[in-house]
Structure formats: C-alpha cells, structure tokens
Figure 1 (cartoon, rainbow, N blue to C red):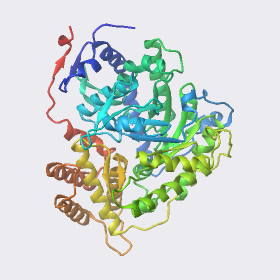
Figure 2: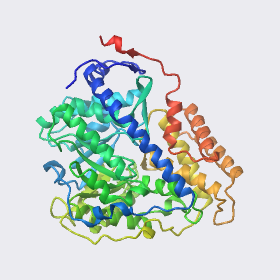
Figure 3: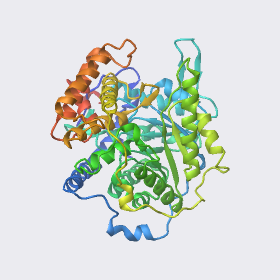
Figure 4: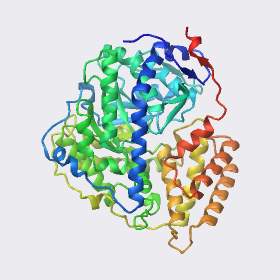
Length: 543
C-alpha cells in the first residue's frame, strides 16, 4: 500500500481533539486515491441521471432495459451472506452521534445501520465525530453518560451487527479538497470507515458492511463494485470482504433490480425498500407527467398499488437471487406520558411489520429501541428461520404497475402540513440535526424532500385541492409564510433557533417557487451549511 503523504489536500474544517487520528496522512492518501480514480466516473453518472430526466420530462416512462434481458432471464445468485448478516429480522437506524451509537448497538436489534446520510446533517463535526464514535464502538472503547440521571452506558457483549450508510453519490464533502475540488462525500465516508476499521472488524468476527443509498442504475452499482474491488486490492483484503445492501429508493432502480444485484454479486447481500425516498423519487422523476400527480403524502402507503408492486418485486427478485429483501422503516417514536397514543402507534407498527413478514420480507427497519420487540414479534410469528430467502415468488409487476397513478385527494390541510414539516426539518438540519422528532415521528431528509417536491409539483401542474383551492404561487407563499410564523411562535419547538427557521422558510420558498426542480434540497441546504469555509490544514502541516 502506498504510504506517502497526500498531495494537494486542503482540510477546511477545524481540527478538534481526536480529529487528527481519523484524518491521519495515510488515511487521507487512501481517500485521495479513491478520489483520483473514481470521481470522474461519479460525475459522469450524475450527468447520466440528468440525461434520463430529460427523457422523462419529454414524456418517456421508466422501463426494463432490453439490453439486459439475458441477465433477468438467466439463473445466477449472489455470494451468500456472512454469518452475522443471515438473520436481519429487525434493524435499527439512526445518526452517528455518540448516544445513538451506544443505544442502537444495545437495542436488541440484529443490526444497526449507522447513517451518515439522510439521518445526519453533514456538518464537519457530525461527520468526523461520527467516524470517531464508530471506531471506538467497534473496539468497545465507547461509552455515554446520560446527563439527566448520570448513568453511564457501554456497548454490551451482544451488540447489534454494524452497517454503515455513506452519503449518496450526489453529495460533496467540501471540508476536504483535492487539488481544489471537493472529494465525493460517499468516498469520504466509505473510505475513512473502511481504512480505520477493516482489521478491528475482522478481529471481532465481522466485516465492513455498508448500505448504499440513492442508486438509480446498474451503472451506479458497477461504480460501487469497482470501488470495493479497488479498496480491497489496496488494503490487501480478500475479494468479497466488503459486503453491502442496496437501498432501492429510486424509481429507476426498480426496473434494474436483477442488474444491480448482478453487478454487485460478489458484494451484495440484499436490497432494501426505502419507501419514503422512493415516493420522493416517483414525484421527482415523473414531475412533468401531469397524469401522475400524487395525492396527499399521508394517503400514499405500502398498500398503494405502485408501492405494493415495487415491494413485491424486490422480494421476488431478491429471493430468486439468494439475497435478503429488507422491508421499510417504521418511524414512530414513543410519546412520553401518553400510553393511548403509544398503544395506537405500536399497533400500526405491528400491522406494518406483519404485512412485510407475510409478504416475504426478511427483515425491517425501526427508528427507536422501544419498537424493536414490536417488530421482532411480528417477524417471529411468520419467520421461523433466520430469513425467508428459500420462499420463492413469481417475479410480477409490469412497467405500468410500477408507475401506476394512485387514487386519492389533495387537501389544503395536507399541503399546509407539507410546508410546516419541511420548514421544521430543514431548520433542524441547518442547526446540525439530521434526524428530527416531529409529531411523534422520527423524520429524516426524505420526509422534507417529499413535502417540498409535492408543493412544487402541485404549483407547476396547476393542481387544486378537493374543495377547489388552486395551489398557485400566491397560495404557496401564504402557506410558507403562515407556517414560518406559527413555528416561530411555537413554544414547544426545539429543533433549532429562530435564525434557522427563517433560513429554512427562505430555502423552501426558493425550492417551491423556482421554475426548475432542485435535484435534492440537501444540495442547496449544504450551500448554506458550508458558507465561509477557511483552510485549516494543508499538506505541509503533515510533513
């Protein structure tokens, strides 16, 4: 492995105590190698997304690629899952802060997905301290003291298996520049975690396991396969040491499930139904199709025909290929002092997980430790073994089924709810919180993406509510103004300060009233998060 110091690197974030251990010269050299080898390919893939979007805007709909029909028709399977990823009936997910890492690993869930992506605001502090927290957790050196009761918590001996979700391919990490260009956030998160932990993970009998977000095509899956292969070669690891689960949370990816698994067949152990981002992707990719406008966000569930077709297709394809088919997130969180509300929420979670298990999913996600036993019981009732991969289903669901327009209504209360939740979430994100408790739900960026995307689409398509209110620009401005004022006056609002609320409302106005649809709100929000960065370290300081 090349151990030379990296050339052309600028770090634009403060170097707090402990940061230099993560940002060591050899680790940075590894990152620079990834950047120089793969960043051009990454940018080309992002350009390909926009070319496909132009086709959709011109009236085309996603379809199964003719050129890969042989991959879909032939018989093959992925590499079997390692022992500690065979039973994944309940996974807990959350950001990478110290308290969450300790509590999630001790939650009783089979796995913990530590999330650098949608559940984390990508501040420099969050990203680097997240790497420190995971490094210490793997070595069982992490602890957490509850400020309220003074109790100290450590990772238990039967901790959950750790998986890590790096940020998506669309995001940059502007706090690390290579020859004046930001490194891809995906490569930054992946590279630091792998470099520092592959050996310690092996000692514990586990491995470097990842969740891959926002993939849209087999070519993006091939990108990650090449990254994995290169990283294994550089670090002297056997092929297949790195393992991954791909989130199927974009509409185009559903038409290439076999192909994605095939490209990653040495690495991939499963696919996951990322339901909330999937709804956002449906709106985004079909935004110009006036006959495919979604109703209120609350009316789109996993029982909605296009969502059910998507989840059942994931199950069938995964089981045919020997992979896990992971179900979606239950984002409910308990309400202190309201047992009635908790009972209703737990029953909704139980019913949702029972449906997933009965349909053939091999596991699911929850957002709170109290939901682990609820979800586990639902899967235990159906799944006697570690998974249900041996249950085979016919691969059904036509292209038309996967883009079918759901029935439902647009309501003024639903539109105002979108404005409110978007401002609340974005404000929290700007204040450094990527996972935000809002009305007894643990929300991440996907919720805000759906909310702002619906408002934009309803305005652009001239949609009206069920009572005839036209959702035009004037209505949107009034709704955003009203939501902003109500949040500023809300004595119980704790996600951010008033400055972030005002900034979030301003950003939402820009997103909703723009002629162009922003690919991700986090791209524009990141501009505000990283204003005024200054170089804190250059290569010469490593010498």
